[in-house]
Amino acid sequence: MAKKIKKYTTTEIRNLKNRAKELSEALDEDLDQVIASYHEKYIHEKQAEILDQFIKNKKREQAEREVRKKAKANAGSSEEWTEEELEELNNSTASE
Image 1 (tube, one colour):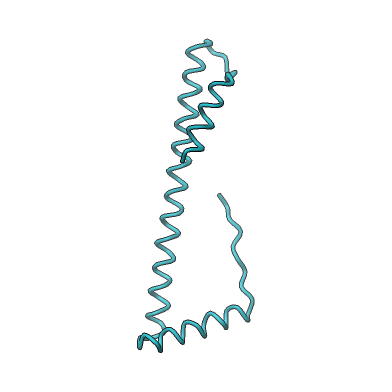
Image 2 (tube, one colour):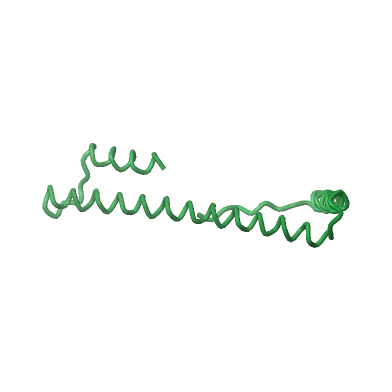
């Protein structure tokens, strides 16, 4: 789940600050307030993204557990999965 963090160059940072300053002047708001509101929006979007990924992983893990449980019930203590079970697992995780 580790993601590479984008490294901004000095020029990119300067351009972003200039755009934020222009926006604050256009909206007639304090620059810090504009930056804070966009920072808050970014945080909410990231939290939603992380939560969605967490839910997806939990559903995948649940599907894997169900397939293993079914496989053990069908074949005793064998850990071998049938092609049908693997396909079922792939279909359940791909639909998310």
